[in-house]
Length: 308
Figure (cartoon, rainbow, N blue to C red):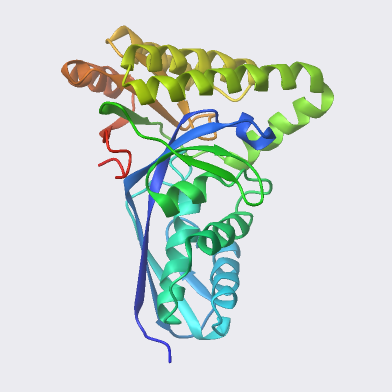
């Protein structure tokens, strides 16, 4: 017997280190965010998704249909309404959060509790509706809500990380939304044209990620900032940055950020700046002056709670 309405919630994410290289089997570090979206499944003429995130084309209906089938519901009997705190196309995992929230709402409607591994698997499958060859790190962050090291696979390798000291981040959101799929596809074309060059760059990213994991565990913000800055240099060499991102990165560093980089797909999305709390206001002010909207989040030392 199904229930209507039924609700599910999932948070967004920030990739701290390793985006793009993670698609090619290298490790990355991500953290879940408390900000996210809520989905409400109701009986009605479906499958239909009512959401500013993905209702503009057929992908929303496909998501509802596929998620409904996965939990044993008849797709045509369900509509899902979404309320989101996440701006789409900004690198904060809105599509993956949408997939997990819709899946959870429909599972609740079916009176099912999904096991962790099943939810992670279905999240990876559903994310392909929006991104052709995703690594799976975004739905993992949406589902887990914690800080973790991730290596792509089926199943992926997920290592929860204990954060040794609070990590304060200023998230700066750009203006226009950009296409993660376009950034990923462009890099794939460049990799196919010159595999040795890009494989070497991915290896460099992997080394930076491991240095960042050690810095996180030790609570060493200065070394983590160095990892942020080095990762940004490599992302620029991979061709997934943009002039707008680089202006914001420079503004954050000039204002006192310990390190700054793009997060997510790049090509115009979000920037994260690692800050000492005493300098957070100055960094936020500089990023607002650059045309960005900002939000300050903190990764808790316990490593088991999403950032506020």
